[in-house]
Image (cartoon, rainbow, N blue to C red; front, top):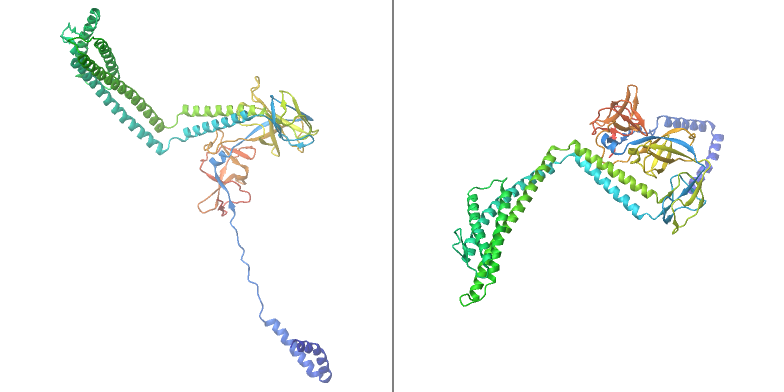
Amino acid sequence: MFSRFFSFIRSLPGTLLHLMRTAPRKTALMLGVLAIASWYGGLFGTRTVDAPVEETIQTPMVQVASLGALQAEGTPIVILGEVRSVSQAELRAQKSGEVTNVLVRAGQVVPAGMVLAELENAGERAAVLQAQGALAAAQAGLARIRNGARAEDRASASAGTANAAMSLAQAKESARNAYSSAYSLSQDALLAKADTFFDDPYTVRPKFRVNAASYDERLSIEAERAKLTSLLDTWKTELATTPSDAQLDAVLATTQQRLDTLKRFLDRIAYFVSKQDITEDRTSAAIAAQNALILAARQSVDGARASVSGARSGLAASLSADTVASLSENKIVAGERTEDVQVGEAGVIQARGILAGAVAVLEHTLIRTPIAGTVTSFSVARGDFVSPNQAVAVVANEGARELVAFVSEDVRNTIQPGMKVLVDGTYEGVITSADPGLDPVTKRSRVTIGIPKESTLTNGSLVEVAVQHQTSGDAQKKPTQKGWYIPITAIKVLPTGLVVFTVTDQNTLKAEHISEGTIIGDRMLIQDPLASEVRIVTDVRGRIEGEEVTIAE
């Protein structure tokens, strides 16, 4: 079929030519009609019209953060450093020790601040780790003081005070019971048991009937028995009045002394009873019965002594616990005091100083280059033992420069060798050394900073160095003494002044005017009284007031 169609197409021009020769007028008319029909079909025929494309407007997405959170990220510290030229640096060991790690080889190009070798420093690293833990604990303690007590802490403190008060009441009751019981036991031990060895025990001249005692010994025991009668009479009179809370400890102390006196008296009697000889009138069974009787008297007094001693100890412990619980509750309810905050801040400063000292000691075990360049000499290998001030390596760089700065003690405590810094707002540098001590005259510490070779800083010029101050995640929830640090990217310059953008409930940007402040690194210090909970857009570049936005999660 396709062959016939192609044959017809090939024969069509010849057919038209034949018709034009045989019937020219009919052929011309037919071709004209076909041309007109084709034109009308193109003019009025169905056309495909592209549907308009609806443009999709995407809502921009922004990041927001509270002012308190921005402060927790750390605020830069700006110091001034002097540029100086360094052709080469000869690196020497600052202490003796075994080389445990070698990180470079001769001929290698190294950046400023790189550690070339390490000495044995397991103890120094442990000290740094311990100091870091102490600093974290001090910061947590300060945060707890500043934040105050939680509701559950208050409830726990109140419950502890109530329990301590209940325990104290029970201890006082136990003390009164021990006091009265001690008299009863003492009376039974003396009158019902010990007096069986005396004639006329209730008179002023009792007679001791145990013959094992000598004449003088009997006289001494008889005089002591007469005194015990007076002691019991005084004790009985005192029992008629219940001792007050304030008198309890003194009453128990007196009771202990009386029981000790009675115990010594019974011990003397028991000694002579046990020394009796067996006779026709005194059998071994009788002596055994007498020993059992005096032993029972001594055990009663010993029990009373233990009861009084325990009651006195329990009373003292309960009084102490009640006082501690009461003071703790008062402290929690009253909240932080100025002196508590000062103590906490002093603890943090002390911990930072200890950490800085530990880091400085660790730094003495590291061979660190202060400049970028080529290691032209490296004279030690792993396992070698080096002495203090021994030459280890030489790093040369004709175009190398470094910065020398002198900082206060507070700034020195926040930096350490190896920390990255921003020099002149353009170049990234690294702290290569920091003296652990202060100059006795200027009270400042010397810090050297390595800078890249391609920097265009002029020798002898003073440039700004921004050091990022590290703080804990929740250490800054209040403005600093100077104000709020806000990233430059969060500040918009309008004809009416400087503003930051907040996001309304309708997800639109709202401008909040701020006063211009000092630029420190990549932040501006403002003095406006804003709350720490205020959430601002951290990058306002390309944003306008009233624009609808989406907050990034």
